[in-house]
Image (cartoon, rainbow, N blue to C red):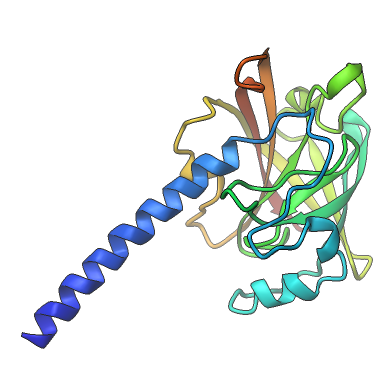
Length: 216
């Protein structure tokens, strides 16, 4: 009798966990509009700027396998990107936090570090207000084989190569953006694209550039 109860409980937890995960995927691809002018607080009550020292990052990643240092800069020569990396978690309403301004990018620190096994995610703005240039305005220009680089806290530079780019509807369950099963290191870049909707205050599409780490 006891074992049956445990079994039912295990199934229920698995179902609830699955629901929570796929809800998270939706939040990731529903990036806040580029007109946002201030950081929203993460679920832990800290903004991404509070996490720059890495203390909360280390705590959040205590159970993860870490082989790379904390990311500091993202460089994409082809589209003239050389951006500081902010660390973000989830906002109080369950969405992935976003960079404070148009120039920086935001790494989701609850996932793998760039360079570690798994799929890490970095978001950046597109189409900032008042025609101000944003870091990922030209992300769509990247093609298969293009290279980008992450510089970590130890001064180590890691190389990633573009595998493909995909467009998504904001409500798509895009598990492939955040899950990898090949035991390799991936870095996926997320931004908006398409048409700005004044009613929903969001762009009509999301763009994800999938990249793989290469050893040079």
